[in-house]
Image (cartoon, rainbow, N blue to C red; front, side, top):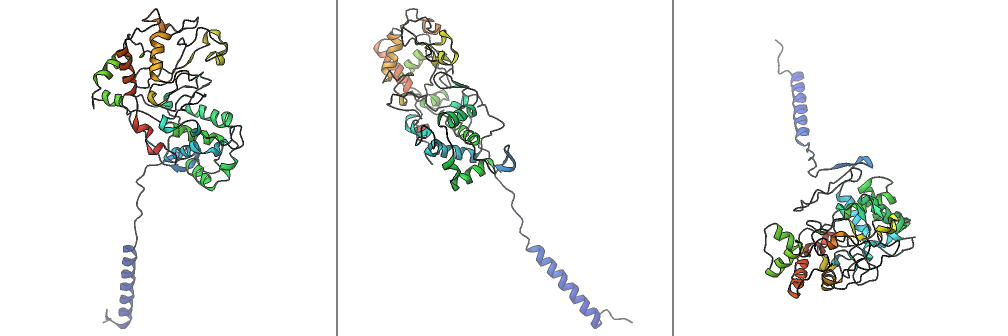
Length: 357
């Protein structure tokens, strides 16, 4: 009878056992690859390249911010836009060489320009805007205004940026290969601008029931939000601007081609200027399109007793006060200023994520 344990079979069985053991050992050494935990989104400019979505907080009382499908918010795009905002390289080769966005917009002043002859609107909550600049020269999306800033205002040639290995890497991460263009620079800036949002002032916390205003602040709020002061028609919560253009009676004579009239060429638009947001207004003086008022007290007194009649005066200026005067007493004026200061958002002007990288 043939033996199972013959020398030949023993050798074969031993070889088979070694193969099995070796096979088991190899299986035990396989290390599974962890799946990515950070969500990604396909970049529309390069479908083969993935970026990390940037999610804005839900701001109390605010509508959803409009977004362009061709320029979704990403961590990489916001980071690039932030760097460009503070970098004079963006203006290299243009008439404003050596300047950056941050040269005229200081975070500690709510991204406005303090104490200069050039009045600029603050960079606050602009993602909800659809017209830009004091006269509304640029209309459309944030991407449109940033394209204007890069190509027409700074007239950037991007040569310094293209020569930078750091920028090459950041543009690649945000937009893919061969992406250092004025269009993508504008898109990155637009993404960063959409993060410059102020929504955590003392008044915001009051609206959410987190704290109470003082008696004087409440008096000011009631003046602001009623026909007594008439402020709310153009400066209502949450943006505190209607994004429209008004002639508020700064002067008795309207200069041709001034304000909105410069854009439209319509005489009745002369003297009409964009409504500035009142968020962080305590920090954004001097005030008006020409910086004529240095303090909030001067602004309040203008509305109280200094509105000038002219043929283009907005009807809102006489809606509740035919004589163009509010007739506020000294305490009421103080209270109105006190309320305006509740719109200051320290978390916005001190946010390190918005500061120079």
